[in-house]
Amino acid sequence: MREHDGEIHVLLITTRGRGRWVIPKGWAEKGIAAHDLAAREAFEEAGLLGRADAVPIGAYTCSKRMPDGRRATCEVAVFALAVEAGAEDWPERGQRRTRWMPADEAAALVSEPGLAALLLGLARVPA
Image (cartoon, rainbow, N blue to C red):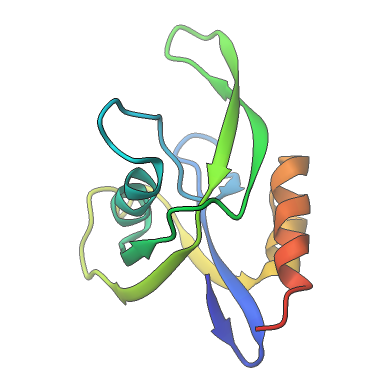
């Protein structure tokens, strides 16, 4: 997220499959702190470089389709990333669209109710 024109803006990305708007996220990995993993996913999926806060700003649940077709309910911890730069190239460039937007606009575009609520909360925070 970043401050722009006095309000909080967030970067949304599209999923590779159906093109839904989401935030970068990944699976927990043993030996990697959750906030470090969040920063890595932001780079891999959106080309963002920066440092993630160690304390999450919130969490929400979502349903994830597994490779075998089953669905799993996941708890997603959300970390703020202090964006320092944007890369010119990154692993999933060309596989997803990215867009910065005000947090309230982002809340209207995401399909997960918990993520929408979290984004609306950010929209109410003074920049």
